[in-house]
Structures are given as structure tokens and as C-alpha cells.
Image 1 (cartoon, rainbow, N blue to C red):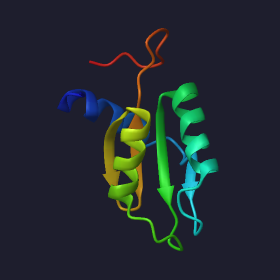
Image 2 (cartoon, one colour; image 1 turned 180 degrees about the horizontal axis):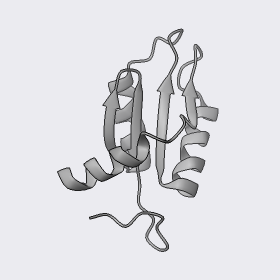
Image 3 (cartoon, rainbow, N blue to C red; image 1 turned 90 degrees about the horizontal axis):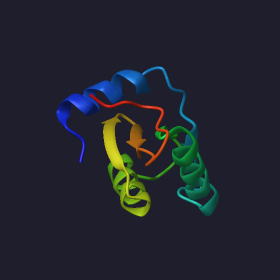
Length: 96
């Protein structure tokens, strides 16, 4: 579980990140799930964007992905969410 200070730190880093995973009109497909998994393993911090033509709910999507990959929801803003899963070894982020 992330503390408020840790979430604030990760939010400040996520502002600069592009949305590596984008969900379109097809919704949450296997390719989207694979993409989230790949980005979490490689970068630890991932921004997910739901396009306007998608019927997906951002809060439900964030909770689904967080439970599936055992990661933390850092932030939900508009149609974007930020997820974080810290590596056991050689993490890119040193949390406060």
C-alpha cells in the first residue's frame, strides 16, 4: 500500500509520461492486458488512457487491472489512470 507522500511523488513523475496503453472501442482485450503487463514489468509506472469512443469506465478498468496485476492505482483523472508496481530488485523508483 502506497502512502500519500509516495503517491504524490509518483503522480509528479506520471505527468510527463505518455499513455503507453490506450483502450479504444474494442474495450479491454487480451492485447491490452498483455500491453499493461509488459509496460509494468519494464517501466513499473504506466499511464492508461481510455479513448472517447470506448464504453469502458475508467474506475472499473483501473480496479480490474490493479487486481489482475497486483499493482497500485496511483491516480485517476478524467479518462486516464496511472498504475504502479515496484520491482523486487533494481527498481527505477526510490519511493520517499
